[in-house]
Image 1 (tube, helix red, strand yellow):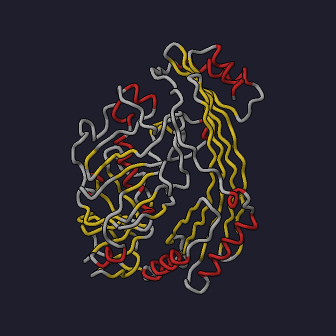
Image 2 (image 1 turned 120 degrees about the vertical axis):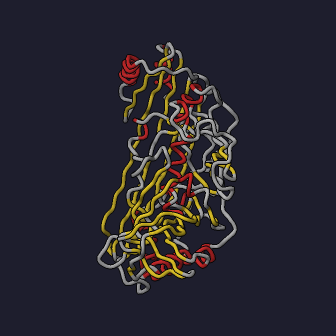
Amino acid sequence: MKKLLDIAARVSDQAEVFSIRNDSGSLDMRNGKPSDMSASIQSGYALRILKDGRIGTAYTKNLLNRNELVSNALDSLKGSVNAGFSFPEPSEIPESWLPDESVSSMGFHDLHSRTSKVLNYLNGKVDGQIDVTSGRGIQDMAIMNTSGLDFSRKSSFMYIFTSLLYPNSETAVRKIFQSRKAVDFPESELDGLVNLYVSGFPEVDILTGRMKVVFTPDTIYTILWRLAAAASGKSFYNRVSPLQNRREDKVLSDKFTLYGDPTDPLEVDQHFIDDEGVPAKKHVIFEKGIFKNLVLNLDYAEKLKEEPTGTGYRGGMWGGETVALSPVPSLVCKRIAPGDISFEDMVRSIDRGVIVMGVLGAHSGNILNGDFSVGLNPGFYVENGEIKGRVKDGMVSGNVYDVLNNIESVENRLHDSYAGGMYPSILLDDVSVAAK
């Protein structure tokens, strides 16, 4: 990396080299038998150069030809993409935790053993198909620039993802468990999943109307996707955000607080620097309903004449090669502050409503405006505080700024979400529910 940075520095005003290496493996088991195994090692290098107020980029899977990579970055300057920012200087950053040996040494035998434990525990408790996926990942990331920054971090995590499918369908209740260390899926969490599965086993018809709706942790991303788009520095720079000129205004219920915190000790990917070398910290977007901050990377911070927020990351909703992607404003390690009621009491408080356990079509609707319309996959119908079964062909729709002003309660604990982040369930009032 140092050789590449030196070559790039000679032909540019500033330069940055970013590298990443991911070593991952996973095992899928369906009804007690392995159905798929995968292992991959992916690595790459990304170069960004600044010259005459423009930015050039290039990436490669290896460093066999550094001069060619620099030449490619210089060629990309012809695109005339303006960049008024500078690469950050070094700052005081705490050391991140090192990968745990119990994860680093995990092989397919270990994955099979932990997956089998889940299957054996669930055997006989449900009537449908049981799918379990276990996996582990180890990541090495480094970033170096001509402003003197030279930083690297390593991380590791493992996960077990369990799905209980209803007979003759791909509809399921699901739960993910993640850890920095190689551990088993907690039996208490599996028991809770079984109880939900059994409660939703009957298929029921319901009447279309407005009612109470619970968004569970694995479906919260439907709402957060829209809020993140509106709070992005890109939307503000283009003056298309519905939150334009609303900073410090109360726009949501005071029961709603949203933030990202990569430094949280509970975070499996705890880190103290973003993908541009800016220190990461707890970053609050909404505090008790008040819109507080934008999500900025170096580029949009400069364009809006604000300070970067340590939220510039390579990646996105649709995935892709990390080194091939430019850093964009991204809120990571997301959290919604918990409330004061258990999930069980939340359900008991519902006179008539739906629990959204899974969604189809989260991308539909005007995302930037906050509109959503999602199919229930599944959704559980609740009447007089009791789950009656899963809804047949149901749909929930609305606007996040409307429904998040009608929060009735927020669960008192956080759960891992397979869409990323840790969230409580949220009970909303007066939401549109459609059913055939």
